[in-house]
Image (cartoon, rainbow, N blue to C red; front, side, top):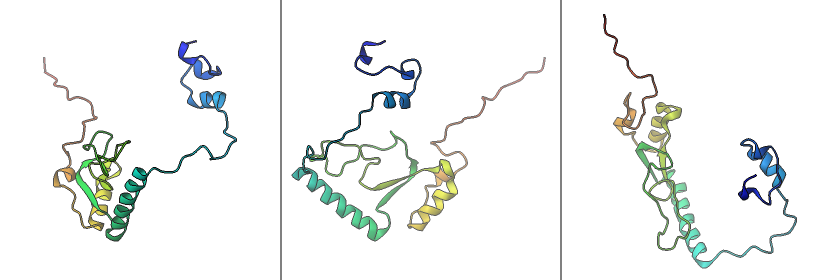
Length: 147
């Protein structure tokens, strides 16, 4: 047994990767109430007011912004902030609050039609048969020489 496991109930998770077994063996339900919770700080409330304003604007327009060229991934976009100076926990999925990103791996036509429904146009390179972000997943080409 590893030193890091001391204090945990053993189980199948010690022999194989088994997250469910670890949780089942080591979970203790909380039976108390929420009296230990603190109210939101003024900074959190200020950020939340900004988010609510953005959500209202999005509700009015249908969509605030979208990146029509770059498919989403965990590292696709630059860091985004609501109010960088006021934030303690950061990490928006795109470079602006409520900015949408395309997810073309379910079908580029679905992405194109969705963008058009909100008045956006898919970037022509993303609509090409071999967009710049697509990785080749086939077998490497082989050259065969006659002897």
